[in-house]
Length: 248
Ligand code: MF3
Ligand code: CO
Ligand code: CO
Image (cartoon, rainbow, N blue to C red):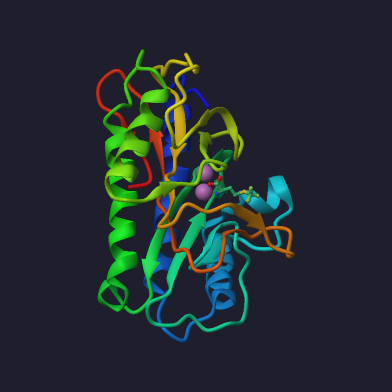
């Protein structure tokens, strides 16, 4: 979406506050022995209490409120009754619809704490620093592909690989809006950023170069067995002064 007035601004800010709150609730509840089914029940309760809806349910008829992807699963993982174990890397992706606006945020949690899987924790740190470097490129008249360049470079420097098939996107009035926000450098793309544009920037990375597949559930997108993956996502508003990371 393009934020055109005070009403738009308040709308996307409020939806983003909801997204941030629910992601924190789910991340804090992601402990050894907990199931992702339980997490999604928590998510449902909290969304209903707040008066928010699951945008994936509204737009794509998803069977869950948010997504929970473990270890080699990257995104769109469905909740199940398997207990989370110490050292698992869980990616949680929350996309609420609140009072007409949609915000999108995701993070990666090491179950039991970072010391339970230092290798995975390092990868999460790389996804976060890639995001932070991408945000530094967010200003009007900047080329959109500078975002992908920043993410790709930071990922490579850390010894990781971006998942090229998956990207960020415009967001705000629908889940997936233009433009596509690639996680790698596409020199042919001449799109420019502009004041008021709202985008979800979401590096998705892998510790091995691997193909992805959609699991038989029709939703879960995974890298091949054995590779670890991390995801970090925020909704960002481009302004003439500084970019605003609305879900932070
Ligand atoms: N939150 C996801 C994203 O970051 C989108 C979920 S909607 C889905 O793009 F139906 F596509 F899964
Ligand atoms: Co998301
Ligand atoms: Co997104």
